[in-house]
Length: 235
Image 1: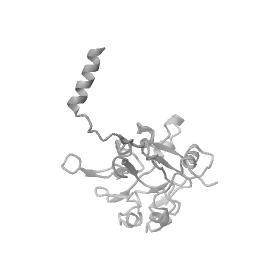
Image 2 (image 1 turned 180 degrees about the vertical axis):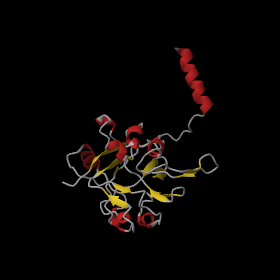
Image 3 (image 1 turned 90 degrees about the vertical axis):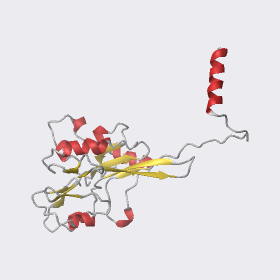
Image 4 (image 1 turned 90 degrees about the horizontal axis):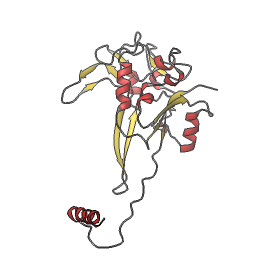
């Protein structure tokens, strides 16, 4: 059985708070695996810098049945990772557990891997001149000095709604695999053939908003407030 460590992200419970992105930036900024993550304009009008995890926001459906979708995007740790294939120096490589990493000592910043990635998961650090990306916090998950419950990526531990899950997606009996099966999880852009390991759980249907049968106009705010006050007085 091939091990495939990756993330499962629940689009139904993700609230777009960016806690995952901030926790990722904080942890990996001091990581020996990726090195510092440069901030170019941290306090300017348009803050910029190197981030491993970014959250995109979309509006799905039509009012009143619309729903905001918050979609975190990072490296998918693809089975057939072209970013590894095109790397001329061997800096991009895939571990036996499926995690795709970049050897900072071998990377020359040629950008070929970035062009090969359809998910925009790689970012060139202008300070170091090397490519950087999500490492699944290998320095956490491999650290046997940490309690087992803490050997997870920083983004998973920081998520306040538990929308992020980490585990072996190559094991059909793992908790993440069962979650994907139960909720019919999907991979991003499967038609490209990269076979992304990370999975997304689709949002549940929006609750139906019942329309009032009466054609009478809705009461104004002042009328509603007056009604509440009268009820309180009658008590």
